Image (cartoon, rainbow, N blue to C red; front, side, top):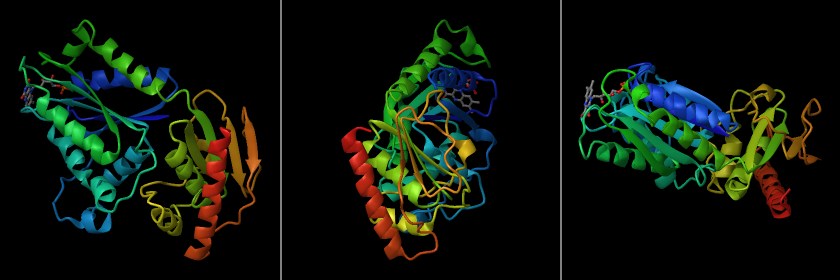
Length: 324
Ligand SMILES: Cc1cc2nc3c(=O)[nH]c(=O)nc-3n(C[C@H](O)[C@H](O)[C@H](O)COP(=O)(O)O)c2cc1C
């Protein structure tokens, strides 16, 4: 379980920041790995409306921190945005990030590719403003709704607090921080009943990436799938991305991960599958351990990648049918 918090205020330790920290504290208490990104201190250029992403599925602007954000958005099970209300909308810094999610919108709606985690990802908004305005959160809530749709998350609603002007005013509110913490616990809790599965191969660039994505795609309601490699490559094999795209599954923005980056929820894996790692797996699953004898597709043509993809798909479906 990975919970991503996007902090939209330029004021550190201000009201949005405190609310977000409380939310993430709740998520962490339920076993999630959490990360807060200070969006206002990132270098994120606004969308140029060049429509490059609609043709190519990537943003033409490469010189900023948005590539990391795309990666984190794709990794997350829960995305929470926290923002002050500025002129009835989110902060400009957060809005730049939101507009840049047009790339993910294009991959989803124009290229018709499905992010395997999209069907189960959740999105939430924390917002704070100085006035009493009846419609204070209306615009930002709508923006959040469409942002979460573009990034592949179900919008679970918002917590909004009025009449908060000074930094830390929120900490004097009778329930705000406790409410945010409780929301963090609640949204993360929804994932904690899933069985934990881990796929391992040498470079985490092909076989284990495809297996992870298939399990998320076909069984993400019941399984929390991860993958890693004992010698992680620098990028996911482009042919694995292509072969999965032929199935309508989007591996873009995913990265090979080392054994040390496996999310630790304080409970063992129910299933560990190894596919030709150099060393034997140091993890002992609570349930099943399997060794899949599948040839490494690295350096081989697309036709071979397709064969491995199909075999992995078959085996993952069998795992789901067996309930592991
Ligand atoms: C540029 C700017 C615009 C703002 N616009 C609004 C507004 O439209 N409505 C409102 O209630 N508060 C508005 N505020 C006040 C902030 O929303 C408020 O101080 C909030 O608590 C700041 O949150 P933070 O501590 O997370 O930055 C505005 C503040 C600034 C700096």
